[in-house]
Every structure is written in C-alpha cells, then in structure tokens.
Length: 220
Image 1 (spheres, rainbow, N blue to C red):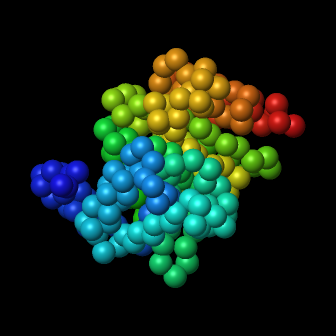
Image 2 (cartoon, one colour; image 1 turned 180 degrees about the vertical axis):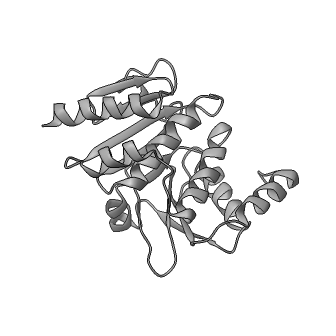
C-alpha cells in the first residue's frame, strides 16, 4: 500500500518539475528490517518515482559495511540526501529514523535545496561558515508530530550543505531512546552541537551561529 496519497504525489511531482541538478537518495537498512526500515525505504522509493532527476541506492548496514563506514552510518534506518549524476557530492545531510509527519516536508525541501545547489543561508552566515576550521556535528532530535522541528532540521542541513566541515543529522527521538536519554531530550526540537552545546527549540539562524561558535571554541 502506498504511503503517499494521490493528492500528495501530484503536488510533489509538480514541485519537482523545478529540479535542475540530479539528486541521489541513499537508504541504509538491514536484511531483517529494523523498526521503520521498511517504511523509510518505501518513502524513498515513492519519492524517487516522482522525478527522473532523483535516483535511489539502497544498502544493507552489515553486508555493505564499508559503504556504511564511508558515509558515517551507525544506526538504522538512515537516509542521505546528496547530489547525484556524474559529479556526486555528499553534503553531510542525514536522516536517522523515518522522515514522516512534519519531517517528510523537510525531506522534500532538502531535495529541492540540493538540486538547486544553494543552501539559502544569509550572506552573514555564509561568511561565518567559510571561516570554520573545526568539524561541527549537529544532531537535531525530533518527533514526527512536532511542527517546530522541521525548521531546526532544515537549518542544520543548510549549514551542512554550505560547509564540508559540518554534518547535520535529524535523529528521531522515539526510535533512538538511548540517544534521547544520553542527551537528556525532554522536549523537541533539541539540537546538540559537538556533544557540548545544547539548543532548545527552533532558534533563529543568527542565534544558532552564535551557539555554533561556542561549540567551536569549546573544541579548541
């Protein structure tokens, strides 16, 4: 049974008519499907079918161990959005857990952003990001029913696209309770930067950059 309604498919197909550069989706699963692995794979398959500018690759976490290590995949389900075609590029955009509910919209926005080749960040943020010399890891904890979470996830993904030193992970809090406990996630969105700096809620771009600088200074 299809996960997308006919009305949704028509709307997304129309949005995807504006895609320019090719986009590749990569899904990591396993032979004995994890919780929501099958659904995550089906979402990726149904989205891929809506545009000839999107391609899909599916790997098994254990059977394709080298691929998983190369992409930094250590939990399932995992979905990567990257540039495809003859010059593929991994921007560090990750979904850990099913991109459903409000986060499905984030997946669609990511595809449009990667295809356009433009992160959409402000010039001030771009300048700050260009000066980075330390790796930055965003983990944005979400739930599918949180209406504020997509903004936090999308900003992390925009920053990841803008800099090779930044990786942005969406982490579905309910699917990874051990991580939610580790990072004391009591409400979402909760963003963890480099294990040291925590943000509550969907903060404005400038405020997130200020906290990013805190994380970089702590790492130094």
